[in-house]
Length: 499
Image 1 (spheres, rainbow, N blue to C red):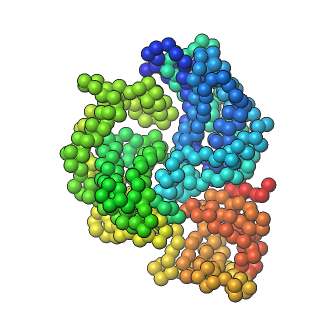
Image 2 (cartoon, rainbow, N blue to C red):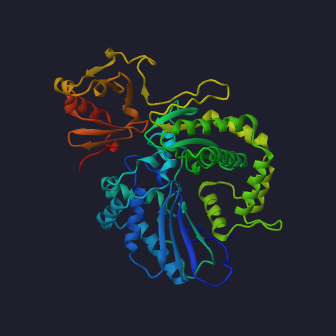
Image 3 (cartoon, rainbow, N blue to C red):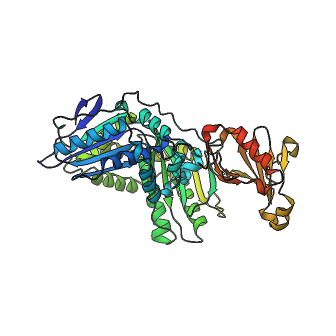
C-alpha cells in the first residue's frame, strides 16, 4: 500500500499487476447518516448535480451514496482519470445548481436506496428518524423540498479535502489535481438512541423479521456470532421447515468504534411468529452454550476462502485492500492485513461467542410485523419488553384530561366514523397526545418532532419514534387552533411547506 498527497487530499494506491486502464475512487466520509429529516437526500442531490455536470464521457464512471460515505469512481486512461477527478472536484467547489430541476426530476423517477430496505426497520426502531434511522425515510418528493442554499451548505461542509480520500489501483497519474474546498473534517457524533428501546421487541409495518445486534467495530467474536446464528436460523427456517427465505446480514457503522449488525429473514405468510421465535431462541442458545467447534471451524474455512488464503499465505484483491484502507482513513477503524484477520477468526472460542452475545442481547432490538406476537424472553427467563410507541389502554395509566386542552372529533365525523377508528387529541405544554378509538395513546413530543410537512391545511408529522401521523383541522372540532399550536411549537427549520 502506497501513500501520498495531492492538493491536501490523502491518496492511497497499489501498483497494478499489468498495464491497462487505471481505476480510481474519490471517496468522501459523508453519507445519509450525516443528514437530518429536513435535509434528507442532500448527499444524493449533490451527487446527482455533479454527475449531471459531467455529462456523457467516453470512459466508465459511476457514483454512489451509502450510509457512511459517498463515492465517485472512474476507469480509463491516466488522462481521462485526471480530467474526470478535476471536473468532479471543481463541481463540488462550485456546485452547479443550475441543473437542480433536471437532477431532482431524475431522482424522483429513480429514487435511490442506500441499502437493502429490509435492514432498515431495526435502525428506525432504535434511532427514530435520526442518523442511521433515516435509511427508512426516503421518498421521491424529498429532493424538491431541498433549497439550493441548503445543498450548497451541505457540500461546503462535507465535500472538503479534509474529508476526502482518493484510492487508485496504480501510481497517481501526472498532472493530478484535486481542487476541493478547504474545511475541517466534520465531527461525526454517534446517533442518539431512542429511550427505552434497547433490549426490546417491536411491531413495525413490515413483512420481515429482523434482529439488531451491536458490537465493537472490530470484534472477531461478533463476526463469528452473526455468521453461526445466520447459518442456524437459515437451516431451521429455510432448509428444514421451508417457512422463510435465506438470512441476510447487513452491517452499519454507528460510529468509529461501533457497528450495528442486522440479521433479516422474510417468512412465508402465517409463519412470522414462528420465524421470530426461532431467530430469538437460537440467539439465546448461542449466548448460553456458544457454538460448536465444528461451527467455528466452518467459519474459519469460510474466512480462508474470502481472504484468498493458500499455502499459509493470505491476500486481499487490490480493491478490497484499498476499500479497507479508505475506511480506516475516514473513520479511524484499525486496518488489519488478511493474515491477521484469519488468525483472529481462528482464535475465536465458543466462550468468546457466548460472552459477546450475552452482552449484545441486553441491547438488542427484535422487529416483527404488526399483528404478530412472539414470546421472546431474556437470558434470565423474564419476558422481553415490548417497546411499541403506542401505550395500550389498561396496561399504562392514561394521560389526565386535565393535563391540557382536549380536541375531540367534530360531531359529524363522530357520526360517520366507526368507533374503533375514531380518536382525539390532547394538547399539552410539551406536545400532543393522540388517543384512538380503543383509548390507546401515542405521545407526540414537540421537542422530538423530526419534520412537519404541510399538506394544504393539514400537517404530516414525522415523530421522534419514526411514525408519520396526519393531522387535519377538519378531523376535530376547533381544528384550526390545534394546527396553530403545532405550527407555533415546531422550529421553522423542521418545517417543509407546499412551496
